[in-house]
Image (tube, rainbow, N blue to C red):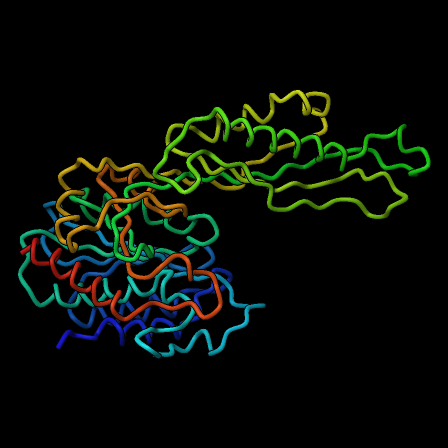
Length: 378
């Protein structure tokens, strides 16, 4: 009978409410104690506020390249969602485990912990590493704390596996993302004399027009990557706020927007294109744009030996893909300069939704995949 230890581990991990706005230390300390009880070397990188931490664990020799497994410990909020069970108590039903984070991505973390525990009982010629991060869901923030220290903990691995939910298919690419906030200013005045003042919302409207025109240009004549559902770079306005009363000309309006770029584009180039649109030029002095956050895209060559090897460990007819959502993979590639793939149990289509779930069969497929990785390290 297949070992269900990863399923039991997942049920325990779900009980920790690691919503990004909260601490993840209880989960991290649980994992630390579990791994250290089997003699596994564990290092923590705690943030400045002493409320969150990244974890790095390793089994095997330190002086050779191995395999790095990586996942984020945080989950998205459940407030306002119509769950049919407690999202922080795992529910096993009809071959599925329900709970917040089951797919995104505590299912993979459970499998990764399971395989690391198995590795601790064996003699390895190449190491197996595990990295857990925090605050991935709010912009891949927390992993940056530990990335700068990885060179102290290990040499660059043969391959890094980011265990985001891909239904256990290997993804070799995703778009990058940059988030911007535009502060649009104007002059307050009585609306009866509106033409005498600069209306901050009108300024914001000109910015939005330039964003829309840039998106149209990218869709019609921009670079294309047909491996994506949306094969071009996208520009999206997600939030706008301004104005105090209808009879006051507004002096302040804020526009939040994002750029999700394919590898052939850069967010810097797209940002320049946005600001060069004719609709925006008369209002340039009334707009201050700040980059809030960014993470790079991922583009791993499918011809690399490491990618071919990982693909060989999965069932036949599992094609490589590119995914529409972002991961920490690009940051790992920038830091380690090693092949990075995304592969994990569950589907992104149920992530962030009420009644999120992962199929037990997906967890077992992940277990088998990781067991084959472990066998290659012996």
